[in-house]
Length: 181
Image (spheres, rainbow, N blue to C red):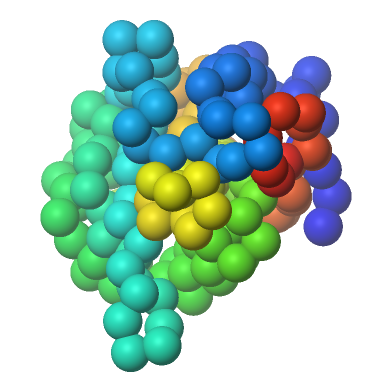
């Protein structure tokens, strides 16, 4: 896996990374309790929170909060839904693998693909999955920051087709937290 080039990504990704580094306890991962929504208000509409549910020896993922821009662009509300019920079937395995990797490695992950919702896969989206851990150790939530590399997609555009890049990358380690952020 390659590391993202923050110089080529929307600056909001580096801002979120830097914010999380600033609020995480020394040697630990940040938890939901460390996040002040007012401090990241410019990014809230691009942000999803996902509960990590451990059951039967496996992991399930439930969308707790979906940013308003995300709901609008997706054309539907997925808050409260499990991954399998929230996205198109052809995206479930890929997204589950990304989420599982973040939980197991306790490190953020970058990915880019079309929006995984009905009649929305023409919208080119990129995202970084950030791990959150209430106890600083065990990942129990994911913060997903979404971006739109194409300005037309950023406005949840008119339906014009755009290319779909397919890449997954690990975010580089930063000092301060227990794992890379």
